[in-house]
Image (cartoon, rainbow, N blue to C red; front, side, top):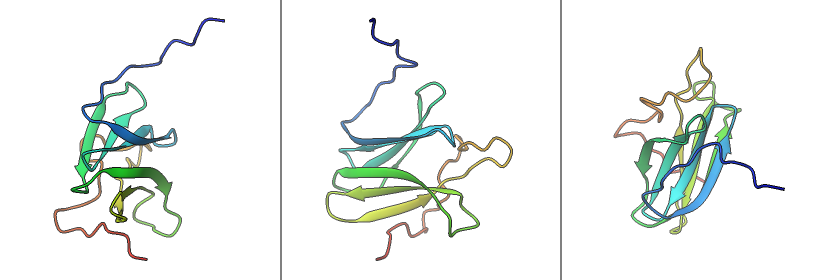
Length: 117
């Protein structure tokens, strides 16, 4: 049988080491060799925001549902090859239920994102 036609095609500017999709909120996230967690739309495959977390490669990445936090429904959890783990809340639209592509990460320059054991 013929192979399925891709839904969309996208270009990565850096080597992707891990990728996770979250259909519930309409986005995916990639961990890249330059230390970035990059969000992209499941609607059209376009990247809309990245956050540089490491000076080394970002090795693994997940989108998790936060059961214990009333303010943030979902977070990106990203681990680096240096053993550091970051957790960054996502801004989810109250009406749309999807990630706010204009301001997806619920952080400021002073927000501590390193996960504590």
